[in-house]
Each structure stands twice: as structure tokens, then as C-alpha cells.
Image (cartoon, rainbow over all chains, first blue to last red):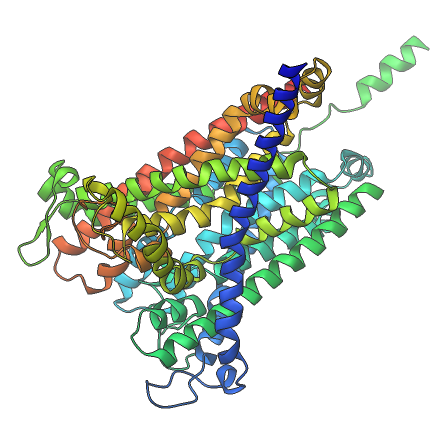
Length: 284
Length: 317
């Protein structure tokens, strides 16, 4: 009996330790959010923070309009490249899952997700910046597109694979060709899941700094021409945070808050879309 | 009757196999992923060629990094990358597995759901945000409350002396925070995939909660947790921005974990835009090539491990 009491006691102690470690894990993660909000809020509360661009140290009223517009253009261009290719690729991997080629594509996508983003930046530099001899938003968006592609492929695959086979078979039984079944019947049904993947990829690309360092480079001016060097939100945070000026460091925190709200907002949106997808699939 | 059947079957033409053009087209589009992967490695190799030819294998063991004399060796950066990544795993894995155990089965379902979502969302926070937080909050705090007390008491051990706010240790600390969400999210899935029957058998035999977890659940999830750890290792090896902001950027093998150091990715991030000549940029790209090859290897091992456990789990279920 005594031994059993001891065993139960040890079990409770370990359970306590596990809970303690969980709390310990949540503390730094909570602190990241807390400091981003509390240090970023003062900057964000000024409207000119969103309407003005870079002002040198000492001149008040600097903002991050150039970085917000730059991120929108960079990520927009990257999405135009990565999302259509990724969706078609994902449809292939799901619809022809037994093809040996499909498993190679799957492996390559998984490996590509884990490739260091700085190496992808070097690649885009060699591919685009070296031949044309200057930094450009296009080079940056190509690097971001490479980061997005495997995410879109894998999430599209997951969404399409969720669709019950009966729908596919009824389409084929009606005499529809394979491409119409896949693109006009299966893909629209899987749309919420596919959109989720695209949104997650957009969120990931919006926050990446390393691939932009040698491609889009950054710019203190407001630019909308993607053949020029462009500023982006993560670049702003990285550059301003390392400067010795308090006012620019404050702007870096403000930009961090804007970026976190954006990225978490997109993630929550994608979760909401996905939940609808699962409910829909349950009804089929 | 039999004759009629025979005659109709003679009239119906044999089914013509239509070539599946949709499959060909989508397969070609999907080929972009593997092709890009190969082209990345090929182009980096081509760009690094001057350095590879000039230094040969000695590049990997050289310790000097001097753009003025065109002498480049990668060892301190390789050392920094491996040691920050491994130290971050040592810090993060026990905590991550504990979180996974708690999230997989303890407490109320709603609370677990909220915590699980929260942790997954934290994996989405951009590394530059972790970086600015580490630079202004974590590193000064860790210097005051971890590095100074530890080196005061244990400073006679060489690699625990010379505390500083920008250090290999602080880089590992922020990496540990960054890989924690991924680590616990994947481990949670792996622990959930352990067949319920195993756990129920253990409980039926009178095992306590801890005995069930430690002797039954964790051993059967072992390969998957190992896979999650290796995936996290891949992420830690390739992480650039947050590490660059706190590691101190000194190109040398550090005498202590509290000293400044450098990693492959942060050397590239700091120096590439200023690199002139042929050998200097090529050497930096060769650092990138070393980094990408190491992470490719680590990732493939991790994927095979995670896949093999989920297959085992589905077979057992």
C-alpha cells in the first residue's frame, strides 16, 4: 500500500512538473506579444505613422507608409507567381497521388519549406540582381514566391484530398473529362481549404526579412515601381532596431506591432475559413 | 441470342484510351518545386565556384575570415551555427515535450484547444519580431539574471566565463523560444497518434498517469518526437535575422558560451551587400551552400522519421 501511495505521489509530482514547464513555455511567448503591443502602441497611435515615409533622425513625423506599400506590392507580386502554380501543383499531387512523380513533388515541397530563407535570398540575388545589375522589388518578390510555393502546394493537396471520392466519381460518370472534374468540380468544393493555404503563405511571406536583404534591399523613399529597390515592413524593423536613435527604434516597435497584427489577423482569418471547409466536407 | 451478342460485341469499337493531358500539364506545373530546389543548389554552387576552387576543402577547416587578404575559412561560422542550434534544442526539447504531453491529454478540451491554437499562432510570428524583442528585452534580462549569476558562481569553468549581452547563449535562448511552438505542435500530433489501446492497457494494469506517459506513450511516440526535434533543428540552423541581432557578430570560435560569436546565416546577412571583388562574395555564397546542404540533409532525415512514425501509427490503429 505504501508503495502505491508513493507511486501516486510521484505521478502527481511529475504532472505538476509538466504543467510548470508548460507555463514556463508560455511566459516568453506571452512576453513577446506584450512588449510588441506596449512598445509599439505609442508609435501606432499617431496617424502620420501610416501616411508618412522615412524622416531622418531629428525630424518628427516619420512613418512607415513606404514599408506598408512595399510589403503589399512585394507580397502581391509573389502571390501572383506562387499561388496559381502552387494550386495547380497541389491539385496534381492530390488527384494523382499514386504517381511516383507526385511523391517526388511532395518531398521537394517539404524540403523547400525547410530551406533557409537567406539561401533563397542569395539565389534570387544571383538569378535576378546580378544580370540586371541593380536591386529590385521583382527580385524580392521572386524570393518570396519560392518561399510561398511549397506552402500552397501542400495545403491545396490537403484540401483536395479531403473531398470525398463520390463527388469525383459522379462527375466522371456524367462523362466530364478529367480536367473539368478536377478544376470545375473538385477545386471549387475545396476552395476554403485552398484559400487557407494561400492566406498562410501570404502571412509567411509578409514577415520574411532574410530573403529581401540582397534583393529588394530596402528604400527610404516611397516607391511603387517594382523594378526599383523597395522597402518592406520586416526590413524596416530590422534596420531601425539596430540604429542608435530612440525615435527610429520606437518606429521599429510600431512597425513590429503592425506586422504582428497583420500576420496574426491573416492566420486567424485562414483558421475561420478552414473551419467552414471542414464543416462543408462533413455535409458531403 | 448468342449470335446477336456476338455480333454487337463485334460492332462496339474497343475503348480508346484517351491520353490524360490534364495529368501531363499539371505534372509539368508541379515540377516547378523539385526543379527550383535543384536549380537553387546548382546556382549557388556555380556562384561559389571561385571560392571552392581557391580554397578546396580547407575552406571548411579554416578559422580566419579576412577580406583584406582574401583569406576565408568557414569553421567559426559552422561552429557558431551548430552550437547555437544544438544549445537551443537542449533548452527547448524538454519544455516542448512537456507542453505536448499536457496539450495532448490533460485538462479541459476547450482550454487545450485555446492553448493549442495560441501556440500554433506563435509559430507564425515573424522572426524579426522575435529579433527586436530579443535585442531590447531578452538579451539584457538574460545578461543580468542568467549570465552574471552563473558566471559569478561557475566562472572558473572556462566556457561559462566572460558574460556579455550579445552572446552565443542569448542567440540560443531566442532560438529556443522560436522553435518551441513548432516543436510542441508536432510532438502533440505525434503523441495523439499513439493508439488509445496502448494507453488503456497500461491504465488497466494499474499504471499511474506518469508511468503510462513515461513508459508507454513517450516510448511509442519516440521516433516522431525525434523527427519533430530534427525539424526544429533544421529551423534553428537556418534562422537568420533574430540570431544576427543578438549573437554579437564576432568571427571567431568563442572561448565561452557567453561570448559573442557568428553563424553561417548571420555572416551572409551582415556582409553580403558590402562584399566586393570575386573571392569575397563567392566565399559568402559558399557559406550559404554549406548551410543549405546541412539543412537539406537534416530535413530529409526528419521527414523520413516523421513519416515512418505516422505510418506505423496508422497501421497500429
